Length: 149
Image (cartoon, rainbow, N blue to C red):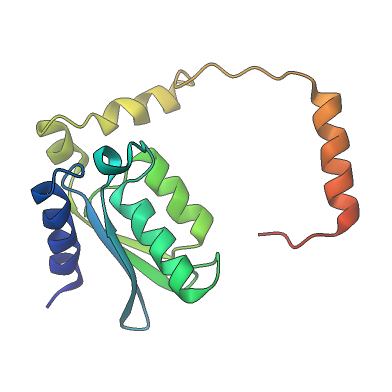
């Protein structure tokens, strides 16, 4: 069975149970599936619980690490900006997707609008405030020589 078929089967679980959109994902390392998940936005009342995020959380928990270097993410659709960022933070080295951004838009998910707003710098207004307070926090963290990720 192909990894994409397994990702699609994950998505089917979610949509048939009314848990969220048709988005499923699996994470593979050295030919083994180490994580999988599907969209649970509606079930969990969590706008971040996309299929890719669910799979990343599952893989990290199972592997006991926050780094997914050497892994490939298989997902039923081109990742939204949040999922793409999550994959980057996790260190995923390759993403294989099924449906395109246009396919996703065709069924009512407008990820392309998010990408365009980000490019224009119009996604969410940003404002810097109380930098001195936060810099003090950063200095203490830096002095602890805590593990960086």
